[in-house]
Length: 249
Image (cartoon, rainbow, N blue to C red):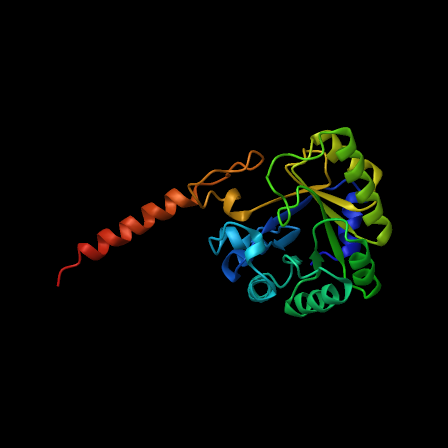
């Protein structure tokens, strides 16, 4: 398992860092066997696993169940667990919930936005923190790219610098211009993990179900499937049904 210091050292030595989401025992086991650097138990499980329209529809109860499952499947991988919507609305509550996620098997927690007091409290209590800037799904009114306007770009860069000073060791940069992703990566000591932030970040994260082509819906513009598990799965089930139907009584 890569420690925080080992992950930071990968940035310092210009080694790319791989991260993928996983939400259950079976796929966490698969991700660990593939030797991914980090697994993110993302609140995107609301959409991917539970069929909700928004990540705001789940809370700590769901995150704890899925974090425990992933920890059992990938005991030797650095697991990052999302702080769900409103679980970090104040410093005291955030600390209580972060401790629960760590007890469930996470090695670090991720929270969206520049919540400075919350981050300061978590770091002071030895909780490894991953930031998340750019597009923030928990509060976004739409999912268009952010950071194109000069004022937005400056704000995101400033927030990245503030988070790094507070002790955040890694920052997920979502759906921002490639040039901004590169600038942040060059100017902050924290690891940068891009998702739709261009190729110049320290690493990348994608949703496992997008990577493996496990659905027949619309893919984000920055995510192309590497396999077609959906079609293979449908075909496999069809063949199973045929075998059932062909069995004589």
